[in-house]
Length: 227
Image 1: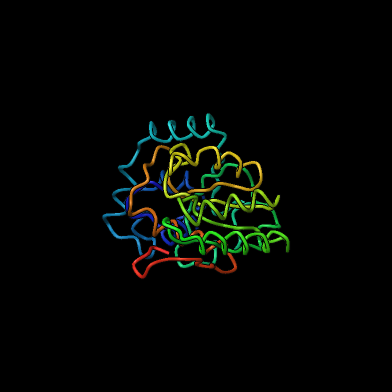
Image 2: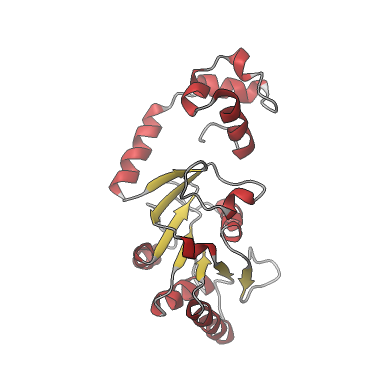
């Protein structure tokens, strides 16, 4: 999953051809070139990429932080997420998803909220939790934080999707909130442990919020907002 140029489609094509990641990594350049859609650059990257130190660090960090690494072939990988155009090959997860989370709605919006935005976010999240729905958001300041906090206050389930590694909470002041969400839902990311919250990560993150939700409610946002 960390080899450049290997997205979900190529990941799946390689598994169909060779049966397992181990066999993919053992394949020769000639064998890899027989996989439809895999060019010489990506095939060469597979045969030359052997950063096992990175893998060991990831496994150690995951264990230290209570993080599970879920592949797209595992039973607890969100079913709806498999249906999007570009599902992640791996998810890093704290907490757990349940069947109840199949009935989820994303609640997102601006970091600079108005009193109206705050009030409406609390009202919608309260109603959603009362009806047994899971609130999904991105742990960001503003609307996202209010959505998660309201769900927790209503004893509802909530899921946070991060644009950083799970050991790099962002924003940092939400680390305590992240821990509370882990007890009442899940915190997930497609980014390896240690990944900083780079701006380019958040549009990618957003497709996971929508991918695990039945819909997304944008509470309040400007025209240029990522929401």
